[in-house]
Image (cartoon, rainbow, N blue to C red; front, side, top):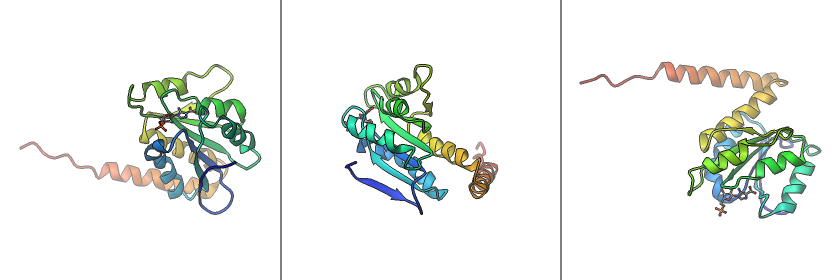
Length: 173
Ligand SMILES: Nc1c(C(=O)O)ncn1[C@@H]1O[C@H](COP(=O)(O)O)[C@@H](O)[C@H]1O
């Protein structure tokens, strides 16, 4: 498989982060940042169902044997990448709708979420928050069989709750 691949973490990647274009990276890096924070080994690369269909097939067909436990796939507009990956691999695909210029990501969302029965893609919110949540979801899936990761997730949730409890509202004048 040609094309640049970023790899983070020790050992073989457990999560694949793929996106239809490098223009999606500002959104999809939110997923990468979460995985790095949780020390989950992952790879990130551009794969397009439309523009590099052979690469997309090869990526999906080798995902299981390469040890990937989930694929986080982001795309914008006619976002066929997550669904086509899901069609070619049993590895769970988590779809992230990237905000498109013309339709603000509504097109991306509907293309990803409206899969025909039998080929599911878990679909997240439009944009970087959706990408971060897809990564947190992948962490939660892995944490079901990984105590250390489970503890990290519990610590993350505790810190998040503490941050909310420390929130202050500006009093009225
Ligand atoms: N939706 C897809 C697919 C696909 O689904 O295979 N490949 C690229 N794209 C999307 O096209 C948008 C514009 O891409 P460019 O910025 O490269 O023109 C991106 O959001 C990308 O995800």
